[in-house]
Image (cartoon, rainbow, N blue to C red):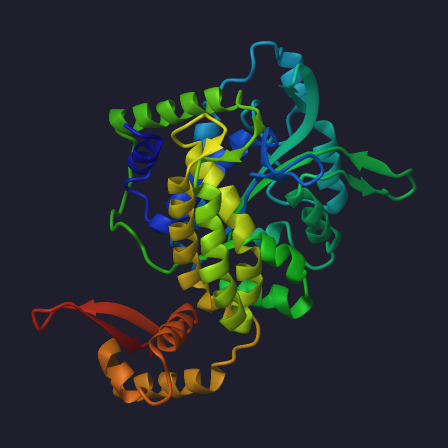
Length: 408
C-alpha cells in the first residue's frame, strides 16, 4: 500500500473535500522535511515548507482534515538521544508530540517569537551539525493568529516562508535573531474573514501570494458518524508515522531527473507566461507564485514514495494537476477584492433568481454573446461561494446535468 493510499484510507469517512485531503497529506510531508532539503545553490535556497489555508463554509471539514495531520505527528517517535527533560524544555505550551514543535492556535506577536526562540533541532550536513527552528502551525481558524492589531505577524511570516533569519526588537529589550526558522502552516478560514482581512489590509500582497488558498464547498462523504477507526485504518496511520520517522533523516540539495528541467522550461514558456499575462486581477498573485508552489509541492509529492534527492517529472506533473485544481476554484477571491465581472455577475444572479432553477447549458445559451465558458464558470463559482445560489446534479431526465438554484 502506498502512503497516498494509506492516507486516503485513514481519511475515508471524513467530509473534507479530496483537495483538502490531498493538501493536508502534503503538509504532513512538508512538516517532516523541515529545512533539511532544498532546491538551488547556497544563498538561493528554496525550501519545501508550505503555507496552506482551506477556505469554505463552517462544517465542511476544514479542521478535521488538519487534525488528521496532528494525529500522525503524535505517533512519530522523538530521537533516542532526546531525554524527557529536553523534550519538556523545548516543546511549545500545547500538549503536542515532542518530535515536532506545534505552535499555539492563537497568540500575540511576542508570544509567537518567544515560542520560536525556545525550540531548536539539528541535522547533519557534510559531517557538520546544522541548527534549525522547526515550527508546525495547525490552526482551526486563520483569524485566531492573523487579526487586526497584530500586523507584525503576517510581516514576520514573509521571512518565515523563506526560512531566513528573522531579526526583531522586543519592547524594552535588545534586538534578537531567530535563526533559520522552518515554519509550516495549515489552517482553515471562511470567505467572510478574508473579506474583513482584505478590507483592513491584514495580509498584504506578499503573504497572500505565498499562501495556497484552497476553496471548496462540497462534502465528500455523507456519513453521519465517522466513529472509531477500523484496524486497517489504524494500521495505515501507523504506517504513515513510520514513513515520517525515516523521512526526517533525509538531508541535501534536490535536483531534477533527466529531461525534467526541459519539461518545466517548456511549460513555463509555452503555458505559464501566456496564462499569467492574460489572467484576471484576482489570479495575478497566485500565478506569479505558481512556479514556487510547483517546486515545493512536487518535492512533497516525491517524498511520499521516494527518499532520494532526485525529483522526477511525474511529481511535477502531479503537482501541476493539483495546482490547476486549486486555481479552478480561486474565483472566490473575486469576492474578496475587485471583481472585473461584477456587472455580468449581477446579471447572471438576477437571471437565476427569476428562473428559480436553471441548467448550466441553458445559462451558456442565454449569455453566449457576453460570456465565455471560463467566465461563466468563474461567476457561478463566485455566486456559490457567496451563498447566493446552490449547485446540484439533476438526473431526472436520465442524463446528468449541472443545475443552479436560487437560494431564497
